[in-house]
Every structure is written in C-alpha cells, then in structure tokens.
Image 1 (spheres, rainbow, N blue to C red):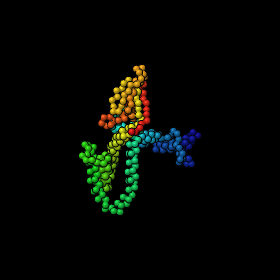
Image 2: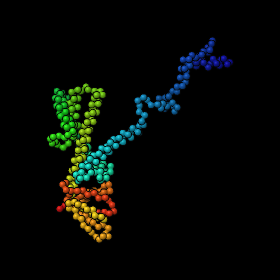
Image 3: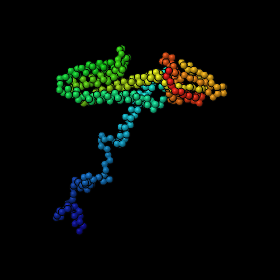
Image 4: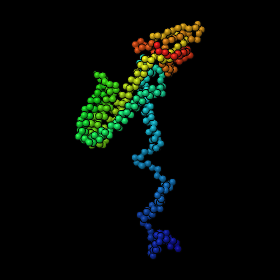
Length: 337
C-alpha cells in the first residue's frame, strides 16, 4: 500500500497508473513545476498580492516624489521673479535718491520696500513683452501666407536679415563696452543685441532649414539667453530712468509736499537754502530750537528724509534726521506759490 501511494504522488491527473517502474520527474521538469506553483495568477484589473508588490525604481526613472517636483516647479520661478523685482527696485531707488545726493543704502530700505518700488518698472516690462507677443501673433499669419505664396522672396529676406542682425549685435557690443559715439533713441543700444541675435538666427535658419540635432538645440538656447540678457539690460536702464523721472517730479512739485516744522532739544545747525532756525521757549523748554522751510519726503529705516523747500540740483542738500525723542515734527499743508 505504501508503494502504491508513492506511485500516485507522481501520477499526472487523469493519467493511467503505470504498469512498471515508478516515474520520477527530471530536474528540468521539477524546476518548471516549482515555478508554476510559485506563480499566482492575477486577474486583469486586480491588484497584486501585498507581498509581491514591486517597489524597485526602473532605470532612468526619477525617485523624487511628485509633490516635491511640483513644489520645486512653483518655488523656483517665484524666487527668480522676487530676485528680479528686488534688483529692479534697488536700481530704481538708487537712481532716485542719487538725484538728491544720497545713497539708497543710507536709508535702510527693506527687501519689501525695494520690491514695492519695482512695481512700475515690472509693469512697463510686462506691458512691453505682452505688446510684442501680441504684435507677433497678429503679424505671423499674414506674413506666413505671403511667404508661402511667394517662396522666392525667402532667400532675399534671409540676405537682408543676416547683415541687419549682425550690425545690431555689433552696435550693442560697442554700447556695452564703451558707449556709442552718437545719440540714439531710448533703450535702442540695450535692445539691439537681443533683436540683432534674433534676426541673425532667423536669417541663418532660413538658409539652413535642415540644421537639426544637438547643435540646433544649443543654438536656440544661446539665442534665447542673449535675448534675455538684452531684456535685462534694457529693464535696468528703464528702472534708472523711472527713478530719475520720479525724483524730478518730486522736485518740480516740492512746494506741494507737506511742510515740516522740526522742533529739537539740541541745536541741529541745518544750513540749507530757505531753512530758518529759531530759538523758542526758555532754557528749560523741552524743545529749544525750531526749523522751518522744510518739506517731507519719506520715513524709512528709523530716519526722516527731508528736503529744503528751495532745493535745487546745484546747491540743494538732503537732510536725514533720526527718529528719536529729542526731535518732534509738526506738519503743515503744502501750498504752491
């Protein structure tokens, strides 16, 4: 009976019992049997068993979590935009207060102050970019139709774009190195490198339309980088111009600014055109000296910035007073003469 049981262990289902020796599976058959027994069939759409989930990362796949990639994609552009806004705000503030003979670092501006002062510059830049993009979208269809109808015009356009773009790039290089010896319209020297590189690339690409591969990608990246640098240069010059224009507006309407009466415990000895010093009260007075003929400009970094009512670029001075208990300010309404 035991021998019969052992024979049935190796008998295939439905097969007739052998009449002779006992069948013993070979090594290959034994391996296939083990592999078949280890394989668990999974229906389509069903999740695999918990202990058989493959947690390995395929070669070339990113192991960075999806949420971290999204967060980096959001933070990186916002940080870059904040840095640009800070730089343009600093450039604008430095140009504005240098007009009054001050360095912006003396006023203790915060990062938020610089970013807020960059708003008008950023609006000008975004408005210009959106206007150029809109003009390109409007002009591309008719230009494309004209070129398709007149294909012989394309070589002539390429011949015109290449020397024009090269000339603009050369003019921008000279302007960046030592300045141009002749007057130009506003922002033309700063924008000429970017426009010239774009025209030059368009002319060369039209003459070599089959230029592809890594060299084409590298060329496009370098062209884009040069255009961005040209825009950055132009925006910096625009920020300086906005700051100087703002300073001129202040001085032109200086008498409309609020008037300031400065009362001081100690003598300040302010020597400025139109500023009058008067001694008030007796020796025991809390504020012994008064100064009139000043106009309010701003308060920042714990300091008051005042200008004489008769300020001028030739002999005007800017007055910076600390915000302390030894000084008291009174304000009056500014009135133009």
